[in-house]
Image (cartoon, rainbow, N blue to C red):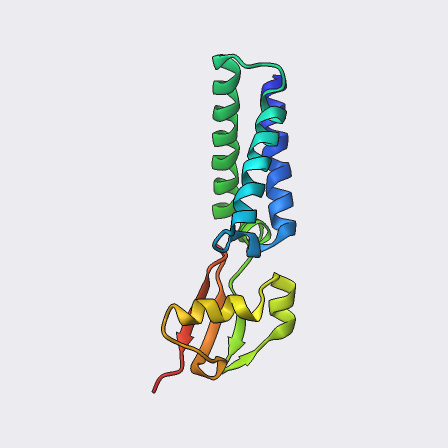
Length: 147
């Protein structure tokens, strides 16, 4: 039972930490982000398994993590407030060429992050953007001004 409790606790801890870190962490990763992810995964693995390196312990950990994830999925589909608490909602960062800097700052998104997403659609300036929306998955959707 200790393995199940360890797995459930680590799942919850990681979910809370990533929620606090914000959706910025879900954007495209830099080399620093990759290194951090590797370190977190190693620390998590040690916390999950402790001194139990058996196949049974690893299997039980994996099954627990999947069951916890399924349970959260069911909770999110049944209770919209839980979904909003866990995943958040989409957030408009730019409206009609004007940056909503308070929202961007709260989300941890820089102006360069927005322009990087805009450049992928051939846009170079904010006045070419009708809406820039930070999606629940951390990606920035750009809707250009129609010409």
